[in-house]
Image (cartoon, rainbow, N blue to C red):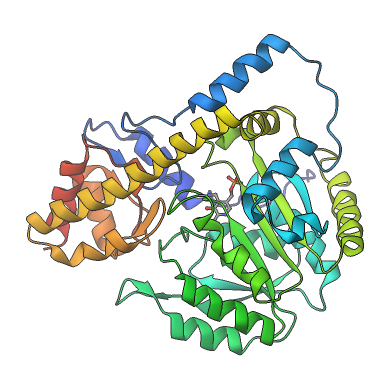
Length: 399
Ligand code: PMP
């Protein structure tokens, strides 16, 4: 008997498995719509020009690599707070937001979950049905019990807002409610400003704890517009909540693992105490975050010219996604399938296309087009070269 003889093999992540199958597919026309990555018109992950410029000056400066503080690079956390809450937010002036650099948005979710498991009256998380699959896994691993709330109406291809409110209303006070700030993954169905106001009022009244996941700031309407949920929670008088944010998409820095956990507390003293707890958690996991990605983001956000350049590049990514949605809808309509109109209304990189598992299988087998089994497609993996082919294939399996 050896020590690991009882260790079971964990099945691979189905979405990553999809990319492996795609890579092994010999067909020249193949398209991978299963990914969660923004690709440019040439089908590449962009290296933003603003990032490239900071990177060059960092290389030229050739600085030594000491440790960062446990909670990260101060210029990075400060810039992140301002991006999420707005530079003039009274919360920032009052010292009520404790922001920590984390290992990607995923790290922010996990560190946030560890904090809340101890701080809140009970460790229950309410997740939208559906949600990003890793939410369940991350909070589950941190000891949370997970419940679902109604979110998506498959028949209408949009938000089931009444169902959502009714389910949130039934939750026990003190339950953590995970909300996607914008560009809901996987459905692309977001709340309107008016709906956010109603949700915020309900969270406050029912004493539920908001946990905002902000992985796509700037990918739908704009930097400030996509953060409206945060502003509305504050306006509703909710004094404590959490935001997990990520620059993976908005800076196209996936592998640099740049994220942040921002905890809003009722007072500056509480924020300080929370920050000390967050540092304790991080100290016992990875001790301190890495320097390079944070230096890139801070370098861009603290330099007015580079920041303006980044905003232009981000706008370019956002507008390209919108144009691809329009293009796909128009081509499908021209092929006799106007029923895909809803794709235009969805936000962010993803669309819940409504394609069934059987249709997804046909796309893969007959056309070499890879989508997630739930019908989720990554709109940002389309381009002018593959758009006709994908539209034709979707039309064929939709007959
Ligand atoms: N939340 C959501 C909704 C996401 O889609 C993702 C990334 N796919 C993350 C969090 C995690 O982001 P990161 O890659 O920065 O860990």
